[in-house]
Amino acid sequence: MEKAQQSGIRHISDFVDDTSDVIQLTVGEIDLPTPEKTKLAGINAIKNNFTKYTSNAGTLKLRSAISTFVGKHYGMAYDYKTEITVTVGVSEGIDLTLRTLCNAGDEIIMASPAYPAYITSTKIAGAVPVLVDTSKTDFKLTSELLENAITPKTKAVILNYPNNPTGTILSLKELAALAEVIKKNDLYVITDDVYDLLVYGDMKQAPSIVTLPDMKKRTIVLNGLSKSHSMTGWRIGYVLAPEWISKEMFKVHQTNVGGASSISQAAAVAAMSEDSDNPAKLVPIFAKRKKFITDYLEKLNIPYVKPEGAFYIFADISSFQISSWDFSIWLLKTYKLAVVPGTAFSEYAEGYIRISYAADLTTLKEAMARLESAVRSLKIFSK
Ligand SMILES: Cc1ncc(COP(=O)(O)O)c(C=O)c1O
Image (cartoon, rainbow, N blue to C red; front, side, top):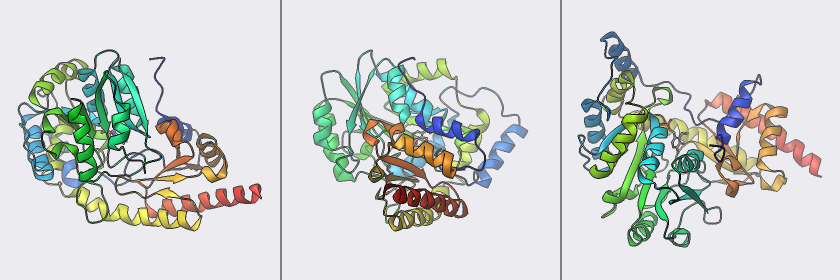
């Protein structure tokens, strides 16, 4: 574990806890509450004493609800008895998948900047993270970049689109090009689709590589309710994988966590049925916030990656010629605004900061006013 690192996102947010009057735009957590019917299902579960162990892989009711939900959204059939595992958030799904797939020394390719848990979980699994720099290709993994990173030790590729931290999405055509390389080299693909329903524009859902021909058998899909249903604290995620992989995952999952909380699982059934329209309700709210921040950044002449999904803006602060870590600490200490330095997502994101817009417009307005004061002081300073 000495070779692994604490998440840089939490590093900054832990710092914030000690500082008063700080506006926190760090952790990827929606400010809005869990939907009502979902909350009620959790309350009823407690009242009805549904408070014991469940089947390790998750209640049949929840797995069946997930199967129906993903059938509707991906247009794909997953057998709820053999191909679905309910996890303790997507976080467990990442760890579970990597521990199951990896032998010591296997290489796991990930597009970088990357969500920090991919790197740490790969190391915990005894494997080697191979970070591919996507900063020169619009933060998109291309088939060429992928092909160049493959060695005889490569076991799998991790994809995360809509992406944290950049909000980028890959089109089905771009995914198809990756799928060809993945099939040719007989690799697995782990696709973290946790933001797939939080997309802007005409799309209702981001495309997923699993839907492409012959990909289901080599794809592990990670998803969950933390983002789509404001349920970070309930800790519910799920893994979709072919039966033979799910069977092996089951051993790791059973040993490590036993299963997800019974109460949260009962709530999750309601989230996926009665409150299944919640992500669609969130999108217009986030679209407004996104427009507010991007308009403001344009006014300040700060370039940013155009987000197509999720709820982050990756802003380019390289013109200020300060490291993203120093910029973030200075912003926090001097202007009481907390953002995440790009380097929390790998060295390939130096010169960027991640601004989360999972906060209400009043908070965002004050946050941008503080950013403006900070930037103006820098400009005066550098003249
Ligand atoms: C890309 C990505 N994957 C996984 C997670 C973790 O999700 P969960 O809260 O379901 O464990 C996050 C949380 O920010 C994330 O951004």
